[in-house]
Length: 328
Image (tube, rainbow, N blue to C red):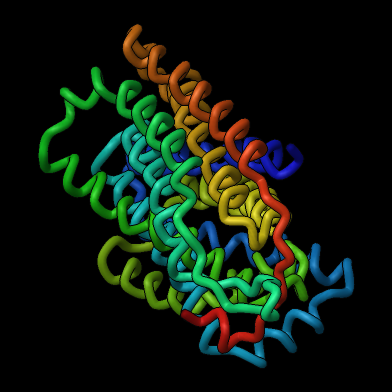
């Protein structure tokens, strides 16, 4: 239950992203600075934590061993994840972005065949490709049905142009985030704690954010004081607190695709938190009865997903692999 609770807490803090990104867009801020400033502001907070724990030297040695992999999977896990979310916030309300983001429940499960594990057999250790956890996937579909019901009444008010620019980039992010996260877990193999891994990925993503910031200066100018302040809040609540909680939850179930899918499914609650947050802070109308039915469906899907994961858990003797065995 601990990984699930950590995932729920992460979803609460992640919801700040959708609310404040939309708020910044409504106040005239550029999506580019919403994306760049979050990760720039994350660096000093994470650096202080890692230095205080005297773990930076270990992190730096790990990054120097595999610089290309750190750059590649940090690009997927952070840049290709967050930049599309901020871009979508410029064309769609936070609830639509948060709702579309829940497709990561499915995309995370569908990525399973891209990973391998070593299991003990009578003939010795064998390298086996991970399988899609179909039993848990059906409850993920139920969660997505709940998300669809929540958006059904409001989606009729959105134009096709908003849907295309507000939804398609998020679809890219739903695959990029779990792919980058899982590949980095394979690369680190438990040698780094959550704070070290998040800091390392943030540092490795900085070259891409600096390049995007130059584009932002040329096209949108410098960010406003309000956007800087709100981006700082997003960096703390979503970038540091939520990311560390979520990465810690996924670290606890590393190597178990069924439990990993369950932890990733907790992020469906972001829709609820974003919805309530927009009602309270941005004064959007309360959802109709159909949307409340969707909320109950999401909760039911989460409970059933959890119960299925427990019932189907099977003890497996897993062996850690070197990088060449996990690169597929």
